[in-house]
Image (cartoon, rainbow, N blue to C red):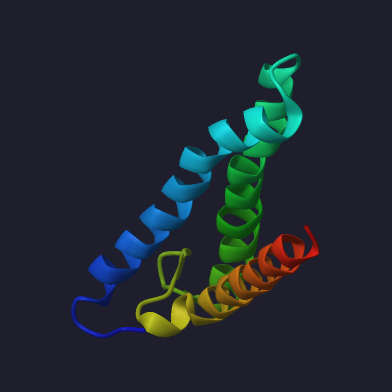
Length: 110
């Protein structure tokens, strides 16, 4: 968004988005599936965080940054400004909106 102070606000939002699934996964796993295979079920439920981080931060952000970057005289690529990650932010926000509506849909189905 490139507004003064927006980095702090969005860092807090991302922190909450990571903390809430970590906090609710423990009771959700035990309530829905019981305690017999709790460790396995918990690890399957929590696997989305590192997998999503790898896909969005490692692959998507890296590829789109390389597309936006310009080659410098020293042989490297660089990109300065908000436009470097704007498309990554839009894609991640769209994925979050889709996830929210899927969660809402599954809650209503129960």
